[in-house]
Length: 250
Image (cartoon, rainbow, N blue to C red; front, side, top):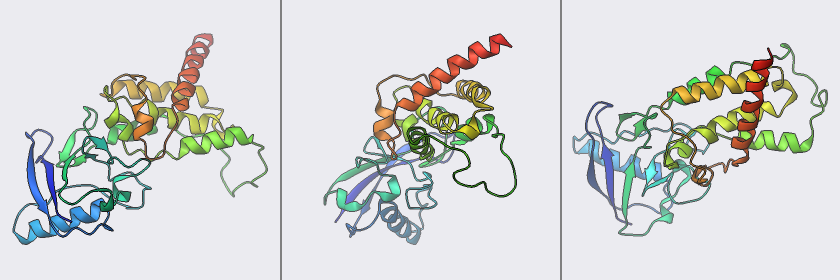
């Protein structure tokens, strides 16, 4: 198939960006979206032109590094799919495809489609560590955990930190991401000693970054490739409120 790509090009955070149009010819429908970009870049380099900068690592839907906007949607129109898992058979011959970086003040553009998501790293780092015995791994059944809690914790822990939730939110809020990181530890026994101190620090760090406030639209969970539930935001809000009362008691 032959496609027309409208790609955002930007040399750096302080530079003015613009769209450039490229013809992607002889694209195989079994190619992934990133493989298609690889082919386009090979042709650009053969012509002595600057290749399109985009980020990727695992290319298996695990790391979340590949995130970008495709026709106005994070990771494209396919539900529960990262950009690297999106295949060209989802498009039609002759389609126009608009490719942009994630749009958020907290995610400044580094180059072209690559954005700086280190704000996420700072939120995670602010949460610190859990108090746990070091040494050999404990027996799996040594600490009983209710199945409901373990299932919810596991679901929250599937967040890959790609930033699609931020890019899809009209206010560029990071509530779904932060809620997932707070919840997956807060539901487990190992996460209890620092549970309320952790949520207080992580929410405070989130607020100090350039993220907006939650819109309650729910677009974040629809854009999330792992379908993280909005329940994690509710859990975070409850824990944060409790943390404020506990701080007053001390």
